[in-house]
Length: 158
Image (cartoon, rainbow, N blue to C red; front, top):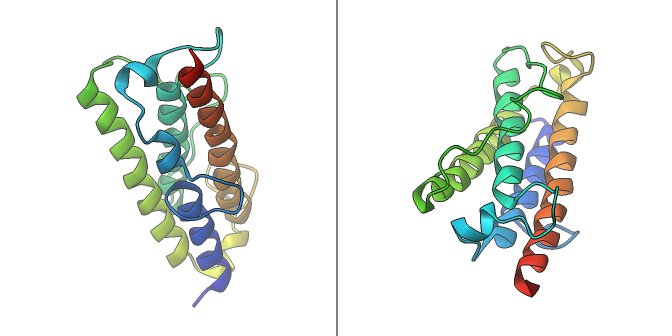
């Protein structure tokens, strides 16, 4: 059993649905956020909560695909990095959240099964290894979780 992979998978789950050291997990941050609030821009020129959820999900998805050998696409500076919100309905908001949490679980399971020796392998399409990728996805998710927390506060004041 690979204890490092288990720890990384645990950190990913904690960030989204567990009891993370830093504060509220993403699931709690999104609790009570309606589609209307998710697409709102309480801070001009800042991404909406919905856009943040879509963006986080992109990295969860491509990270999972990389575990299957699929090269990670260039995302930064492309439309793939920040997907455009095309349907701003309540069902679409629910589906976006559900998809993100499903991708969290898929990636966490893939990380937990990841062979320790492969953590040092280069990620397809990247100049760094899987260890760096997996920790980076956790860090990236927490960074944007903090933004969601701030936007949620801004929405409650507005």
